[in-house]
Image (cartoon, rainbow, N blue to C red):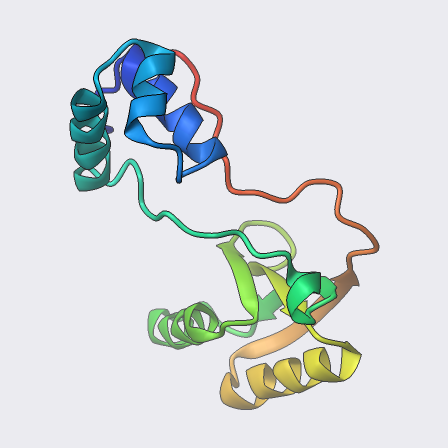
Amino acid sequence: MPPALDELDRKILVLVQQDTRRAAEAIGAEIGLSASAVQRRIARLREEAVITAEVAIVDPKSVGRSLTLIVDIEVERERPELMAVLKRWIAGEPAIQEAWYVTGDGDFVLIVTARDVEDYDALMQKLVSENSNVRRFRTRVALGTLKRGCRVPVDES
């Protein structure tokens, strides 16, 4: 069962998703709470795993990773032990920004960042050589970024 979130919790979540560095005093002033009350609520939201991480979002191009690719992976067999190996491999690969286990034509959808085509090709060769259960993969190259982010809409309950 998801944690119970009141209106103030939801307002805090909206604000910290915009800027996690925003001071508790500023959040409190905006929503009508003291800084200590905001801090207690944020601590509870972390404890309850509503807030799962607080990270800096880095522009991939600024660190030399100008290529974004969407990769569909199809596996040979969905045996649990083979799937577990592939899932661990995917989770451990830094170039894979997001990974989804999905229904439909493929089994996984990956969002990958690479320096160039050669860098991506090396990653995919490694994927195939270290995961014999991968039947095939299909790659789409992102031509432009329309939206990127991790914000979750925080609707009223």
